[in-house]
Length: 457
Image (tube, rainbow, N blue to C red; front, side, top):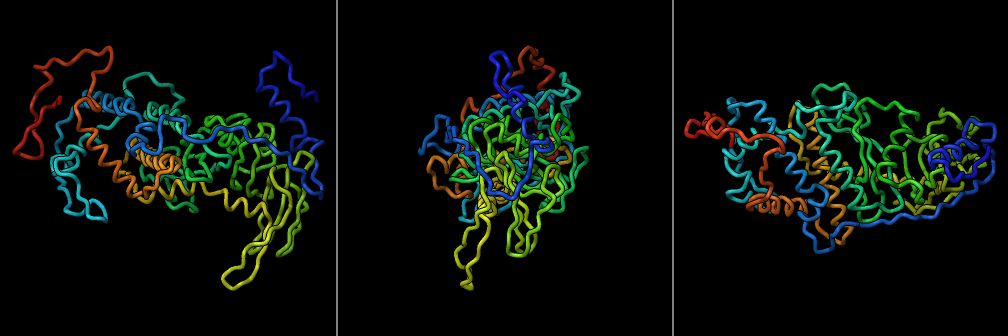
C-alpha cells in the first residue's frame, strides 16, 4: 500500500492510509516474543497558561478567564426570557432562613448584606434557580442535539478550557459519573463509581505537574456514540480532536474500556503514544500469553507496540507504544522487602490519575443543588469542574492557595464583583421589544405577607 502524501490529498485521507497499513487484523500485523522497538515521538506541544494571567492574578480573574462575563450575561438573559415566557408569582416558595453557622472552619461568616445573606435573599435564590435557563425554549434546535439546553455554556467552556491552559505531555482519558436521580434516557449504572447511577461524562485531563487534574476537554454522554469508530475509540478520538492534541507527541493513559491494539495503532499514526491496561479478549490481542506469579510474559508487534502480562495478586495485562518489557526495582516497603514490577505498570500507576484527581477535588466542595431537571444538574457539575480548573491554573502560575482558601477568596470576590454597578447587568435580548411598563411592572404576592414584589423586576 502506497503511503506517500499527494500534494492535493486531504490530510485525513493520508492519515487513514497510514493507519490501515500494518493495522491490527491485517496480515502484516504480527505479534512476536521479541523486545519491543519503541518509535519515539518528539514532543511539539506548547504547555502552560496562554491567557493574560500571571502569578499575581486573583482567583476571580482566573475564574473569569474560564467562565467569562459574557457567559454570565447569557445566563441572565435566558433566565429572564424563561421567566417572561412562564410567568409565576412565587407561591409555594419555601421560607429558608440563613443558618447561623460559620462560613468556613476558620470562623468567617457570610458577609452581611451579601447576595446570600438573610431569608429574603435565600428565597430569591430559590426562585432564580427554579427559572435558571441557558437557551431559548422557543427557538429552533436540531432534533439530534440532545444538549441544546446547555449549548451556549458548553460551547464557551470548550473554547476557554482549550485556550487558557495547554496540558503537559502526559494526559488521561477516563469517564466520570455525575450523580443524578431523575429520569433521562442516557442514565448509566456503574457499581465501580461512587455515584453508581448518573450521567456519564468523558474527560481528558492533565496527569502531572502543578496543573494535574485540569480538564482540557469533556463530552457529556447522551446515548449517541455511533460513528465510524467503536464507542470506546470514538470517545478518545473526540476528546483528543477537541483538545487539539493530535500530531504533537502527547502521551495518553487509558483504562481497559478504551485500550485496544486498534486504538493504539491509530494513535501512533497521529504521533501520539499510549499506555493502558487492556482486556485479553480485545480484537488483535495475542492469544498465547502465559505469565506465572511474579513473572512476566510479553509480545511485541512490528509497529512498536508492546503487550505485557504480569501476575502479582491477579493477572495484569498492559498495552503500550512507549515501553519495553523492562522490570524495575521499587524502594523497600515497610517490612524492608524489596519489590519489583514492570516499568510499564509503574508508569501507568503514576500517569492514570488526572481524571480521578479532578473528581476528588470537585467532590470536596460540591456546588450541586437538588433538582429533577437534568440540564441544571449538569450545569452545576460543570461549574464545579470550572472551579477545579481555575485552581489548577492558579497552581500552574505558582500560586499556593489550598482549595478551601482559593474557593473562599473566589466567593468573596464574586460577591463584591456582582455588587458593583454594571456587573452582570441585565440587557434586553436583541430584536425583542421591551415590555410595556404599565403592563409588566405589577406587584405580586410572595410567601411573606409583609412584602410584595414586582413581577417584572
